[in-house]
Image (tube, rainbow, N blue to C red; front, top):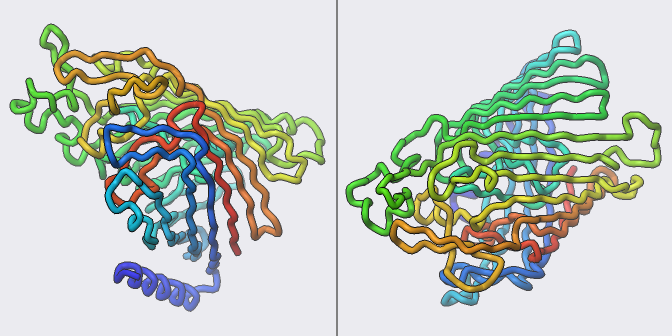
Length: 455
């Protein structure tokens, strides 16, 4: 165990001891889970040795941690959710010495570390704030496909999923106001000022606002806007072509940062942009006494995201390529299953869904992949001059997901998912990472299961 991990455990023990001494309003909940599954069909980018074919690869992980909450005053709380993972990787047989890469790599991480403050007026007006590192979910029904206002980038347009974690972890300040008309209807407004911690360019500040309305517990509507990288820490990272424009113009590397048309007009690409989201959920059980159905059964929900409102010449001329449509339905579980969700997605993206150019080149242009003739995957190639050639290709516009879960005695949860989604490969590598999709085509899919316990 590393020195860093030892120090984290010591500090954690001190926090728990102090909290238990200071206040009786302290809760401590240990948890853990084991996941296992297999990729049944995949394809890889043969242009790089760091990208193996995931077909028939087994994926697994073991995590454990605890959630602690300390009440500080009548309305305030401090939350802390800490995890520890073994991080089992895959074997990349295309690399030299691939076997030693699967040695266990113990790793600590945070799920939640925030302060919150909530107060209510006449049980109608509720105002709350939270500050720190916190999970945020605006579409409570989504189990896998959706929630892309935060789980995405704009230029290049990339979306990503995580099994059984259909939310994003944000760093910053979150304010919320909720007004309850009665027990069945309410409206809510969320304002978030956050710092980017997950995807390059890091540390830039974004502003988001989301409006939600719940009426008669039958229809739930939501809309939101995110100004991504609104306040950059370093403008040269936001518009990379400005870093050393004289040396870049005329070189092949300039194609990573800008587009020059046949008339010599140059379009400099940026990571900065605006996203928009709209969603709806319908629950027909609101008007009927259907006691044999579970609380999540029969809910129909949909979401649409515009990931980049502004068009740019070259790679981003068509806004329709940045429209993502999601639809889901909770099949009847009859209280045998808590959730049985079927979700689908349509996204007419002409480029591979990959962060490869972002992390390898610091570039806001799409990743072309290799120039193979393999159908239904890579869609274009870069001629390394001012001309860009597109390959008409289909096969990855539709995605699907089937999710089922059951909790027993409020302690043990069993979760399973079959999906063709946007899970990225980099989580299964230690170094020389590949930032492409694990199952990049509609016909590619995997299954995964989780056994989770909590107290």
